[in-house]
Amino acid sequence: MAERLVTKGVVLRETQTKEADKILTVLTAEHGRLAVVARGARRKNSKIAAASELLAYSELVLYEQRGWQILDEASTLELWGHVRQDVVLLSLASYFAEMTEAVTSEGERADEVLALLLNTLYALDTMDKPPEQVKAAFELRLLSLAGYEPLLADCAVCGRTAPEKPMLDAEQGVVLCRSCAGSAARGLLPLDPGSLAAMRHVVGVERKRMLSFALRGETLTRFARACETFARVQLDRDFRTLDFYKSLCMQPAISGENAKSDKI
Ligand SMILES: [Zn+2]
Image (cartoon, rainbow, N blue to C red; front, side, top):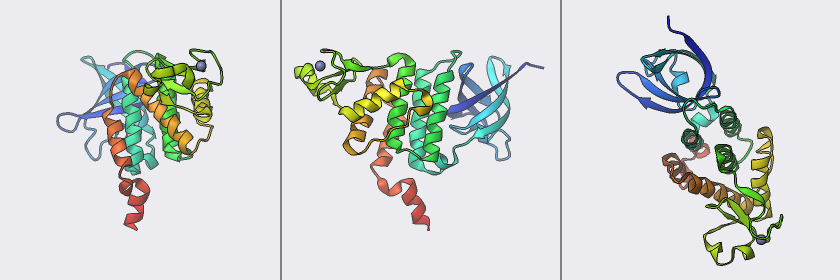
């Protein structure tokens, strides 16, 4: 009998294949990303159906066959029921999964990235913070873990720790005073003391406290815009799931809360 591998992981992507099978991209702590074949996962009575859903977090029992990891058994630990019922939150969580896939690789440990993803999905599921804040904090922290940590401690030109009218240079990953940026300022993202402090907090604080701050109005918007643009510029790509999330946000009538009240 082939040797069993027991691990815990989150499904980052599901691809339907022949008959009722799926190929899953799973993020684990010990093995990084894994490609897993889930045989029969699309059958209604399949015992691995729930664990083979996008974003499901499960304990998985795998065995190897012809170079593939085959899912033998699974017990689901977290399905994020609230996120799953809300099309907007689900699309945002799918973006988190797509981004995570983009910065991880097969066979490379991913303890911190997995923990970050789980914390973030938990925050989204319990809804104790605005989704915009959760999204921006995830983008910035994930990028930092992936080796793109921006230098936010002081202005990259004059060294002031409290840059005057601070701006983020998303390409260079540095913060600048408006006056130090000079004519280059047009391509930069405006911050303010609150949004800059939030970015420093997210990058520097222990993971469990990364969402313990509150921003409002324009300050939250600046924080969100800076983090999203920074991630897109550094990773040099667009995300299909982000485009979809944004298209839903522009149509508030179909957001989860309204959809629910329509049914009543
Ligand atoms: Zn300066």
